[in-house]
Length: 176
Figure (cartoon, rainbow, N blue to C red):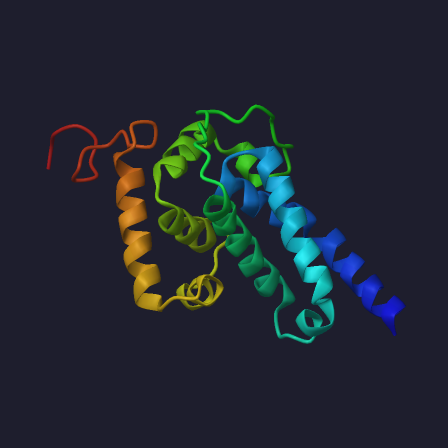
């Protein structure tokens, strides 16, 4: 029984590793922190895998652990981190983040958001979770998700590298 459970966990990790690391990268802004964060969350998941495997959505459970571990990282030690405008390592071409021309600006803009807003924006718009799923992952109401997403997107829209080149009305130039 234990062998089968361990095999299911290993299969889960192989299938979801890159997606979890990508989410962690968007939460932390650093490839190495992202890998450490993912390993920490998976180590905790391994200890409770029997219970997690029985849940309807083990990936959502582990994703919540990822967000919680990221929050714990700042609670335990208050170390100022300086995120750079561009990540030091390039992501492979098959990764959607590698195809974004504004990736450095996006990361810098995300780095300026408070942790809760950043988590909501990443989970809602990058991971494409519904408001209810984000609320479940973060342990808050859908109203909180909506307000944090709205505030986070508003801040990102004002970030210089992400500001649209169009006028406020959405039209290029003058004319009606």
